Length: 182
Ligand SMILES: CC(C)(COP(=O)(O)OP(=O)(O)OC[C@H]1O[C@@H](n2cnc3c(N)ncnc32)[C@H](O)[C@@H]1OP(=O)(O)O)[C@@H](O)C(=O)NCCC(=O)NCCS
Image (cartoon, rainbow, N blue to C red; front, side, top):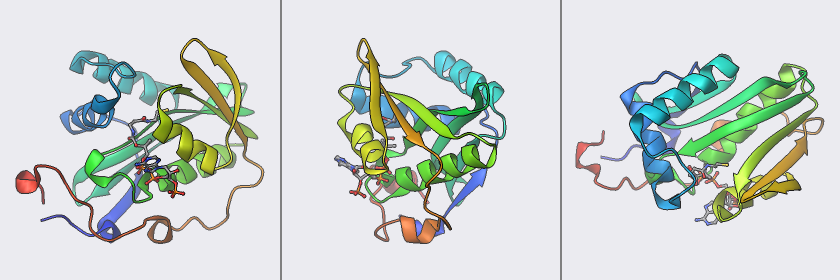
């Protein structure tokens, strides 16, 4: 049976190459077609790269023991003044309830705590959903490279006191194929 979003906790934790995280990544990107690594070995290597970039910069959302989203940031991206958000994924069964936004706020707060003044990310031009969340949080387009759009945001004016309970909307995510879910 699906749990309430109130059971979700966000934990600062290095990304492992566990099957759970690989599956989560593939599930989240599956609808987007060409914007993701398709093979498990590629995803594992990518998660390892993210972990090495900044072992303290990743945050995983858990529902019970099950990871349902994560963000990977990088406080050493550009001489320590520009932080990067390399990855953000939310399990499709938990999307649209504020979890992506909560992870982003947590990641940005981390980058600021590490002394970064600006954060940047790259998003696919056809990834309307991700672009909407970034725009909604004050990111602005800063350039393009092929199908990728660079977005940036100052870290000087983040909302204080990020409250996951307040950031999450709704109370019972629908989980496709939930027979195997908690
Ligand atoms: C992008 C992603 C992380 C968003 O996660 P999420 O938990 O659904 O996001 P939220 O519920 O926090 O939504 C925040 C904002 O996203 C936008 N959004 C959410 N659901 C949306 C939908 N169905 N259609 C369009 N925009 C939507 C809205 O702007 C929303 O703001 P609002 O609160 O004012 O409505 C998730 O869709 C995902 O994992 N996508 C696949 C991986 C990906 O594209 N990552 C980004 C790579 S750059």
